[in-house]
Amino acid sequence: MDRKASARWEGGLKDGKGTVSTESGALSANYSFKQRFEDEKGTNPEELIGAAHASCFSMALSKVLGEAGYTADAIDTTASVKLKQDSAGFSISNIHLDVTAEVSGADEESFKEAAQKAKENCPVSKVLNAEISMTAQLKG
Image (tube, rainbow, N blue to C red; front, side, top):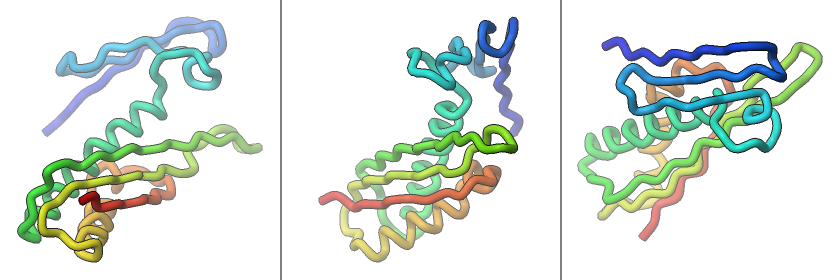
């Protein structure tokens, strides 16, 4: 499977603007310096990485839970992506997954084991070199 997304940038770093889209047409958005580094509304690469990671992880957790005999009623994942600047420039230094799930019959220990396995085996987790932390909470 090959999936594609594309971006176009026009102009200088601070006064330019860009568009980002997916091959499927599910996403088509503008982005800019102010949206990335200031508080202007709109998307940015870190937000898109977070969305990709949260959605991939949620699916991976569903798979791991299924292999253990559970079916999730709901899995809610938020990925917080930290962009930092140091003398070498900007880098994504940390991604924190905050997970809350409703899983009938699961106990806290088996849920946390499943969440850890999903974090380690989610394809997006594997591709990222950032430290990936997580909070997992079983509802119910």
